[in-house]
Length: 258
Image (cartoon, rainbow, N blue to C red):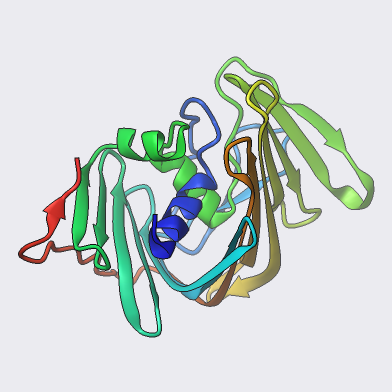
């Protein structure tokens, strides 16, 4: 797997340790924020319609450090567009919708077009659009229907919320005051897989008072791969009603992956 493909896979891994889909909260208009469905959980989620962000990522896998430039575009609840490359050259482009995944690898002149079963097989865990969106936005996903979360009120007004989800335990640390997710932990004791995502460098966005994490640090541990870390730092994040383009075309001569 080349480094831009690995980068894309790491990004998808962020929200993929859960074994089944969980519901997302409903949204209001763009540029607003919404509380989650669980009244006792003091989490506030984003609710803008479009997002356009640029940044850099650094991955460390078994001592091998790899960096890339990132571009992210999103239409909430509809489409996620990701581009990764180096020195102004795009290596990988991906478009995710609620029921489809398309990936273009310009370095190897290959492409994939199919469903989320591809990503599930690539990462060895199920992946859903809802998980990807919540993770990229730093939003909170409520416990599945019929499950009551364990809520611990900590010092300085923070909340720690945990609940079982299929075979894994999901835990989130919520900031005091803002209700934003500060840390996400997903652990699977049976398979020894663990994922920790730390959100930091919270800054208010233009026309949006709710702070957004401009830095994300991911640490994933699996028996086969060992410990893999990824640091993503956004240098520019814009949100609002302005429509964005999500271009994706397959050049002539590219080979389709099965």
